[in-house]
View 1 (tube, rainbow, N blue to C red):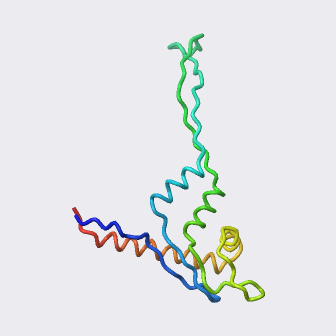
View 2: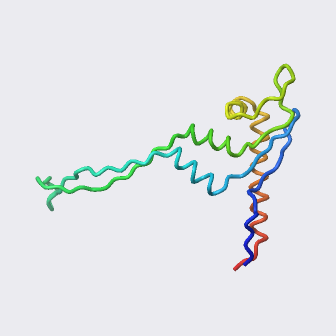
Length: 142
């Protein structure tokens, strides 16, 4: 097996219908690990659980059980996803003609409010995933 330590995460540029280009990349395992750490809250509890006899009557004894719960901040997950997958754009300008800076706030604004931007994003991400899957298919099988 040849190890390619220089393999980069699949990325590309995709046209925005009204003009401009959107630069995207796929997430890597490091991205997902970091997103899980920042968007999930893990909680562990050890409540006392009552014991019951064979007839289903609660006894005065009990035992402790471990319960794990996980709470996801969906808004933060979505924002981090957009921030990590949208790497830039060309040809998007403000009303006065100045280039729109690539900021998290603008990424969120466009993804929540601009249908053309959303379409370019969705189609671009789909194309990147298909390209990545095709490369994986080319790898030698065991």
